[in-house]
Length: 224
Image (cartoon, rainbow, N blue to C red; front, side, top):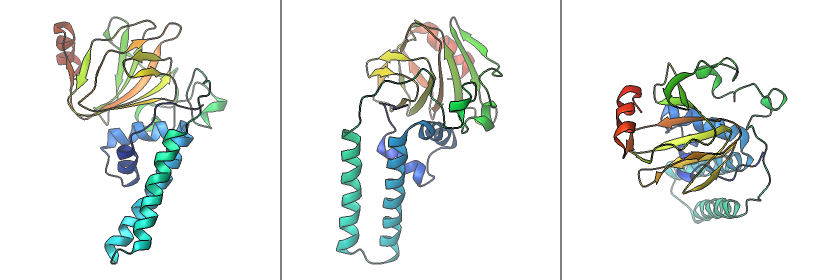
């Protein structure tokens, strides 16, 4: 598993410093389970956070400044040196690699342990969802193959981890293990690929912004 779409550096830093919203942290943690690249970026962010704390406790030195610059430069070089490797159909943690029915461990407290036990709720033709009971802005979606979702933008931020299946939009191809880390500047229309349903987990910190009247009606019902 080698995801090609990763967490934004600001999201990684927010996760490292525990400043992300709880639902965003869950999706980020699910991505980190399957992405060695972002785990390395997290380690760099944690080291950088430690340096910043040291600077707050004592006058900044040239050595500290140079170390922080090195960390930032290494992070940029890592982001530019990602290999393109074929990926499997299902993204999972090392534990789940031996049990493809197992959900990522970050999702288990909110959705249970297995895909088989998920209780989907109809949302629209070809689209089903589950809302986490403890975090209403944390949602799992199952979208039928070949389904074109309504064009939409985001009131603020959206973080979506692909678990099974895949989709395409103006930002590229998103397959298992990939994360879509989006802000209010992005407008897109995901289209799921043929074959298997696309299952993903999403966190929203503001409602989506739909352009079509039917999607807006559904939004009032499902509070997206």
